[in-house]
Structure formats: structure tokens, C-alpha cells
Image (cartoon, rainbow, N blue to C red; front, top):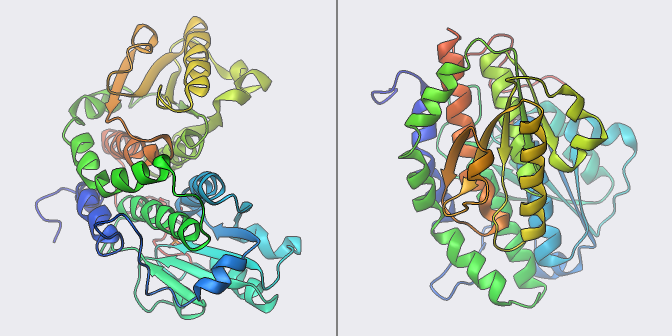
Length: 369
Ligand code: F6R
């Protein structure tokens, strides 16, 4: 049932192009407009939403952090993202004009369920993004957009994460569409690129052998740091989470702009630091700033592992290891940038002799608060 792979996680990483394609299927038509008929929240209500609040845990929370960039940029609706376990204890401000989005692979995570119950009690509308048909979270929500990753068996979430991103992009674009956000060239390009994203994930998967070799060479390290900016920041958090849960290593993700406010003190000789570099096209200011960060940490001895777009030559002189990903619009970059980090964590865990599909102390679905 592992389809020839040693672990479910490897199988699920490999299934990502299909999972992404299946989640897009039938949701974007030939003219590039979105149809999410399954959403039971009427367009009129979506037009009136004044705020979006995303609640989720773990990897799904990281998908939510990325969604915030897309929702605010494409729709100009304010969006907050909160850990589901913190949400209701804070007495959040919610009303009928708040759209709450609960993201959950299993649909059974108790923290997320309690957060959505609280939101509905306050009169908010709840949209679930979920991978498990008929599970509790979609049953208790006003609407659901299913991800079509298929069953995810490995405890560490991989293909479900990429499909959560796709679903978040679809929701963001759909909100823009029903609210009449100006459908400029940028959004047309994004829709076109989204339709090609499965192909790009496939391309990344074909070039992972050097990432595996690199991971094996780091098996006796104690710490790995991850840096990113903009949507690359949640990708860094996700890379660190995967490494913690699978390799049992100290791993931390930082916003690269925060380095100088403290974390740069951690940099020492031969410390592996993974840096997710934004596209040099688009928000090029961020790109140039992160290239300076790479120079700064390398000057202090860090071993730099750089994930950068094909054709971005500016990073090459400062990269001890360079991992290439296909050119992608900035907001969609997490779909391709996360994949090498999953492979990296999986291979490091194997090299350390860990049980990849069943990391210690963890359960696939966390049904206690
Ligand atoms: C990490 C991981 C967890 C889950 C989290 C939420 O690889 O799998 O962090 O993402 O427990 O689970 P769901 O999405 O089922 O609500």
C-alpha cells in the first residue's frame, strides 16, 4: 500500500502534483474564472464580509499565514491568522460580517473545532478547508471547500499542505471575483500560473537527489535555521516544523528582516541556514534584502543552503548549496519552495534512524484540546 516507497511520507510527497491538480480540477474554467459552486455561503454574504479570520494548527496554520498575504493583496479585505488553540481564549472580535476560515487536514482537530464553534456562537460564518469528507469540522461549518489530496497517512503533513495552499488561493481569488476586485493582468497571470502549478511541483520533485545527499551530510548537526521573507517566512516556519517533528532536531524559522533584531547572534561557524529567496521579479526589493542577509550570515560562518528561482544568478556566489525552483509569481512560490524542505526533513530523519511515518510523541489527528 506504500506503492513501492519505503515510507508513506515519500509516497505522499511524490503524490503532490496529482493532489494539487485534483484540488484545482473543475474550479477554474477556460476563461480563467472561478466556480466554487459547492460553497454554500451566498455570494451576497461574501461581498459583505469585512474581515477574514483564519484559524488552524501546525502545518495548516502555516498555510493560513500564506493565505493572509494572498487574501489581503488580491482582495484588500483585512485578514488575521491565529493559532486555533489561542483563538477563543482571547475573546476575539467577531460578528456576522466576519468570515472565519478553519483549515484542517483531518477535520477532527479539537483546537480548530473549538475555535470554529466559538466563532459561530458569535455569529460569524465559518468556511472549512478540509481534506476529510464528512469529518466533524466541515459538518459543523457553514460551508466547506474540500482539498483533494487523498488520504494522508504519514503523521507529517505534506500533500495536504500543498492542497491547503491551493484551496486558500482559490478562496482568495473567488472573494476577489465576487467582490469585483479589478481583475488586472497580475490576477490573470496568477490564475494561469496556478493552473500550471502541478507541473512545477513535478519539476521540483525531479531534481531532489542533491537535496537528499545534502540532508544525509547534515545528520549529525544539532541545529538548522530557516529564513524567509514575505510568503517565504511561513515556508521557513514550515521547513523548521518538519525538521523538528521528523528529525528531532532543533530547528527554527525566522523572518529574515528580524535577524538583526536578535537571531543573528545564533550564527556560528558551519551552522546550516536554509534561506528561501523571493523571486527577483515582482517584489525585487525583498529579493535584494535577502541576498544581503545571506552575505551577512555567510560572513559570520553560516553554511548557506539557498532555495532560489532558476535563473537567479545573484545568489550563486553566496550559496554553499543552491537548490533551484521554477520561476513562479511571488504569492504562489510556497507551492514549489516547500517541497525541497519536505524532502530535506524526510531524508534527515531517515539518516538519523528515525521512524519517518510515526514520529515519537505525535498522533496524526489531535482530538484533545
Ligand atoms: C505537521 C502536522 C500537524 C498538523 C496539525 C493540524 O506535519 O501534521 O502540525 O498540521 O496537527 O492538523 P489538521 O490539519 O488535521 O487539523
